[in-house]
Amino acid sequence: MSRRSRGQQDEESRIRFRPNPRGNRPRTKDRPSHADAVLAQVVTVDRGRYGCLLGGFESSGDDLVITAMKARELGGKTSVIVGDRVGLVGDVSGAEGSLARIVRVEPRTSVLRRSADDTDRIERTIVANADQLAVVTALADPEPRPRMVDRCLVAAYDAGLDPLLVLTKADLADPAGFTSGYAALEVPWLVTQRSPDGIVGLDAVRERLAGRVTVLVGHSGVGKSTLFNALVPGASRAIGRVNDVTGRGRHTSTSAVALRLPDGGWVVDTPGVRSFGLGHVDPSRLLHAFPELEAGTDDCPRGCSHDEAECGLDAWVAEGHAGPSGAARLESLRRLMRARLGETDY
Image (cartoon, rainbow, N blue to C red; front, side):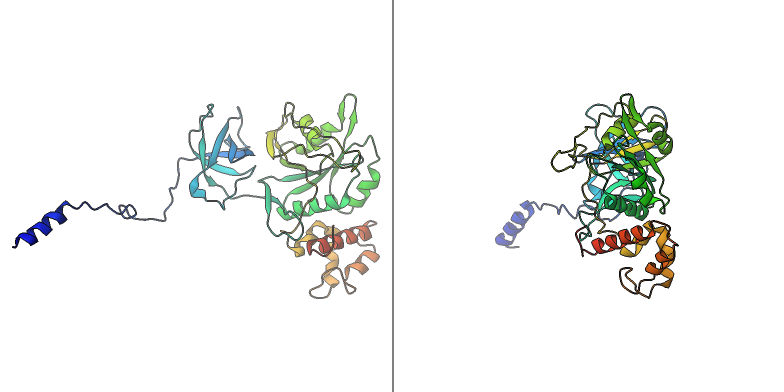
């Protein structure tokens, strides 16, 4: 062997090859099972940190809330919202400064959603795994907004939640005029009013909410946070006032929070909303919010939009099948249909 060949071999032997960092172990798509993850339920969400109740809403005894963050493996497309049942790993001691990881979101039994407006099909998930939606509206100051209530009812039926109307400030106006428009829907309602000694009618609200997971929704200024604070002593949700010029309330609750009720059950307070878009709802499902009209569609032509001259609902209502408020409910349905299709400002 020549001197040059031996020199080349010596140089090559001194070269140090860096191993491929991607090839030093076999790649796999298998995710860790996290069989040791403990069950919890999300009660607060705040800037990427999640307050998780150990054991979930069904737990008894001390309410140990763990601060957690989403594990990277969940990815950006996996949302975590108040009410979600999740699996936690890491430090679940609840000690100050501890941080666990959410590694799993269990299947949801219900999801309350809304969109920014009626033309926006992007869903905003609000609360998961609730079973009742309490729509809070004032009878005066600010004036009630029946169309807003209708929208919340549609969202409730779409999510599979039982609807409930909670009418506040009955000391300022008689509820009969408002409730007459919902008699045909058979939606239960409760009436409260202010007094020097507190809120009259609060016991009936407590009874209806006991043992259930209830979401409170309503536009700003209707007294939702006042009701929440009365239901859960020590909650201390900020209370706003109604603007004297616009007649609208100011947003005070900025994030959803779930708290245990003293008599059992949970209540979730949500930020006040000034609109409740239904862009995510299939128009064909809107009829489910109007059961007194749904049976009348049997005589509609195929593909009926329920907002045309040939619609069979007009005759159905005229014959009295939808009750005394049938005409008003049909108009409400049609306005919802038009708004959902982006044809009117509703």
